[in-house]
Image (cartoon, rainbow, N blue to C red):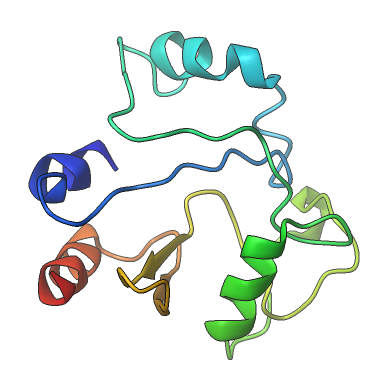
Length: 134
């Protein structure tokens, strides 16, 4: 995400980071620990985000943030949720739920959801879409 900010940060573009612990309980830290974890542990190596990191949220289930309800309703998946559901910590599980950390959404400058990217989507696809929108 830092690379995207370096490429497009001088344009009408920004990345917004929303930590979540609903995927394999991989983000157990509390909000005030978030930047230290990023810098020293995961990804570590002195990493400093070049974009805003918000407080931890729930992106699926009964307590999901309304922003993510809106995004999922406007950019649904057509494929069923697959994988090891024992690592998914929310209920109820729905077909349009966010599948794992680092799933991305691209939103236009007018606030219109444009595209949803799965975890393993090639970085070049996201980069091209941003460049096309800008």
